[in-house]
Image (cartoon, rainbow, N blue to C red; front, side):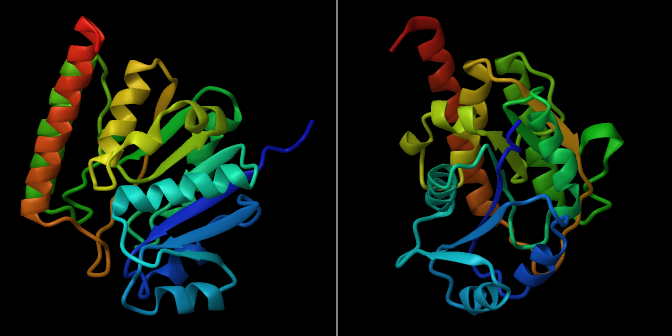
Length: 239
């Protein structure tokens, strides 16, 4: 039987200080390819990534977080990936957990996995998560679970793995180029009945870790709730 092809994609913006240590902690032998998509970083992200031997795709202008992911997934699918991983190169998520993240997809138990900082009694505050992010995450995840009929501990992690079938089916090209892209992906995955598994991961925030400010966090919450209400309305009453 052919070994599934695993491609790790890294959506990068101003990751010059962290891309090397992120890359070097990817478990040996796990990834068939590692691809970094740089969203017009003004620092040395591209230079450092290329020096490490990472394949780099450069956006001429900043397309936004969602726009970056679209390039990541398009490229991985074009390269024949069977499993596609999203790993932020800001070192916020532990690359060593990649083995656990892809395992349910390899075993056919999941179409989509994501790392949860709250699963199995995890305490993100102890790992450095800002209080406003902690409260927002808990409240928003609770509302989403209530409306979606799910019981996830977190729905706002940026550490993910997908099956090829999932990305070929989910309409991610229609999603926003902004941060709400992630919420659109998760909500549609639930409503379309895909198998989703959350994996317990440690929390670590450093000075170099990327973080959304309070204003953009509030905008993200509002947009997520808007997407959720719209999707549930369409599900009940049709388009």
